Length: 287
Image 1 (tube, rainbow, N blue to C red):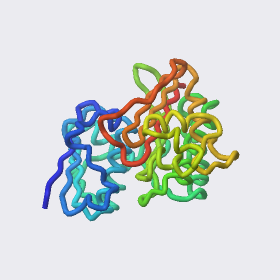
Image 2: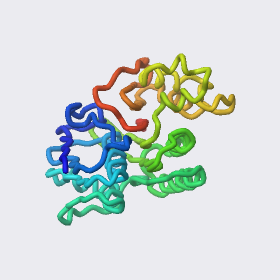
Image 3: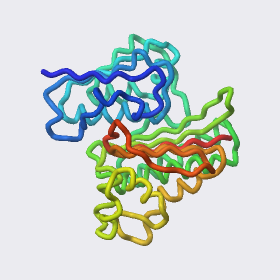
Image 4: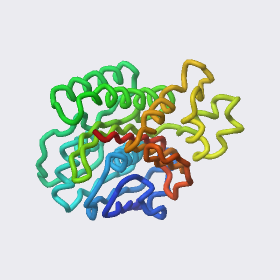
């Protein structure tokens, strides 16, 4: 059995931080099987939601291919406790991924731990629960609660409607306090066909969505949808408009296209050295 090891960096923000030599294989492909896979977080001392959801997506896709998969837990206890608290270890273990956490503690934390979904009704239920949890927790600015829940709902609904993912989608909502201030983060990822292939299903867009990075920029325009319906195409455009406000940040990673924006500074998608197998969108909102 062939062995693969993907080594995460000390500071792991998103999949583009990974070494392309180890992380370039696409677990969506049928021939990604009959091997073992280690996702190695042992040296990781800082990890953000976009990177966490890459771990979930990649591992679930690999397990779907009957690959023997392990997650090697961070040696940094604080990072390990954080990952335990947002249910990373739990969701992987429930889906056949080996995680030896050696009894790492960690009570459930955050507004919405890593949650898996695949239908529009599930998205509506989860978004409503997230809004209720925000109100109960009373963290951050109360006037942002509806914004956070709506951003999550738009991203999650977009994944359900367009990804055609064999593993569904996963998402989380976190609230952070740091020296840089308070911030909400909503992130959603899927292991689906990606933005470019989704837009290519609309014949009018095939000549414009030529690469993953151009497809990302196109998807952020108003009224753009792979369905061709004038009533669709609101999700990513609406989120991008919201994230254009000062201080807000957006990460979109689909295939080898990667876009990172900070509100008010403009944006340009670039070629990533590491492929995201599907689509990841992470929105960050300061309070």
